[in-house]
Length: 112
Image (tube, rainbow, N blue to C red; front, top):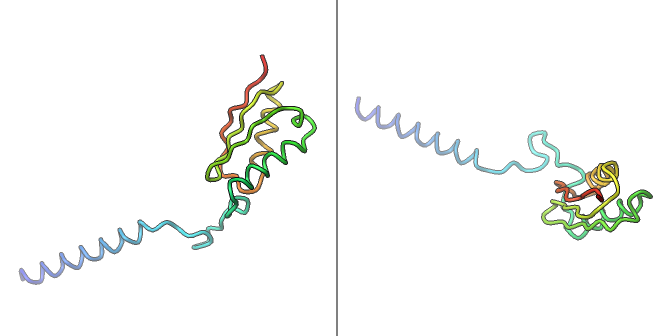
């Protein structure tokens, strides 16, 4: 009976280790019905920065402002001074819509 108990405990330990190993794997994009976000897939940081800058320059209310854009691993930081909160909101909306952006860090301020 003691041998049966040891065999059972070893089986449980092996199954537990297998489950833990399977759970530690990062999910792959597109696996198990989880599509990769379309605008964040494999875009270089320099391209993300260019995409955001282009979007900001194409907006008539924002093109006059010097908004600095820096991207690191898809996380994009907007820095600068604008005239209104509405302009900040517009800049954030445009930046979120740019290809490759994962997250936006807003460091825009309203001119006093």
